[in-house]
Amino acid sequence: MNVLIVGNGAREYSIALALKKSKKLDKLYFAPGNGATSTLGENISVGDYEGLANFAKKNQIELTIVGPEAPLSGGIVDVFKKHSLKIFGPSKKAAKLESSKAFMKNILAKYSVPTAKYVETSSEAEAFAFVDSLEGTVVVKADGLCAGKGVIICETKEDAKDAIKDMLNGDSFGDAGKKVVVEEFLDGFELSVFALVDGKNYRILPAAQDHKRLQDGNEGPNTGGMGAYAPTPLCTVEIMQKIDKNIIAPTVQAMESEGSPFEGVLFAGIMVVNNEPYTLEFNVRFGDPECEVLMPLINSDVLDLLDACASGEVEKLEFSMSGRYAVGVVAASRDYPYSNAAPVKITIDEVALASMSELGHISYAGVEKRDDGLYANAGRILVAVGIADDIKTAQKNAYKIMSTVKFDGMQYRNDIAYQVVGI
Image (tube, rainbow, N blue to C red; front, side):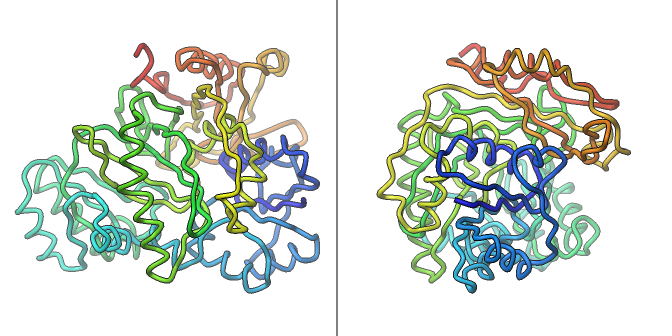
């Protein structure tokens, strides 16, 4: 099969690594890819969705896989289906589960899917009244897409009202914050749960945990994610059964009932409170960096798996995981998450890295290729992924791999998977 991957991050790089194991893969393209994906396939530069669809037809692309949320919410799937092209991802309508937090919360309420109490509004007075009705910490969310940063946890009502003001007047997130979702704070532990859905049927991957804060001990600002690990022992069989029955199944059925059947990856952000799972949010694509730790743990042919989702044939699929663990540690540039630093050269001890090939690998994100090697040119630069039969060894392997990488201003957390190491 000829395959096109849309995106340019470590998520897309990791999907490509998994696809390369398939005997069915012929040629692999990236649109646009990054400086390292050119070693796995061919990077192409095509401006719009129609142009990509025409490229897919011309190059006999049999499956297109969409990584990021922006093209999904922009309607790339609808364009490809108009051209009778097979594509992995939800329609623009179904992608509203991520592109509009208000839409998502209203679906949850309509179909009795467990979630926090909330109000969605463009009215400052209504939002303030709801804040006053709550006790303790308040969560304020911008309605639209904010690259994973549109959620503010407020310790006081005054802070919550300030956050609401800044969103509604456009100061915080522009148009994405012109409508807000204000909700009660749920105090528990978070899980990232991914279901591969074909519109009706699905397969659930093992639960992962992300690390959003920049610094060790969950200190510092929120980021797009500084690391992840999977599977997490915190997600018991009982909790996963509840997530399946009470959250994933009714949501898949809800989208079908609403006339927008969901195809692709349904990513449920879960908060577990007293052994009960609640839905924090939905995303409509693989999480980044969760994707980087889940992909190498899938035993099944990943190309078969994603193709089955796009073909409506998930129920026919044999599906298995390796039973191992993976830990991914993100290396970011000096000024992340506030801004991108000037490009700097990345030095990798290739001999040492090659000697660790059984321990894991590097997935590249914000890199560009120059004559003298790779340069860091974005916020999150790469992910060191360690794999092992137990979580503690997987963590050690990830940091061994990270030790082979250097660049000016490089920063990363030293405690990824701290929640479960030693359990």
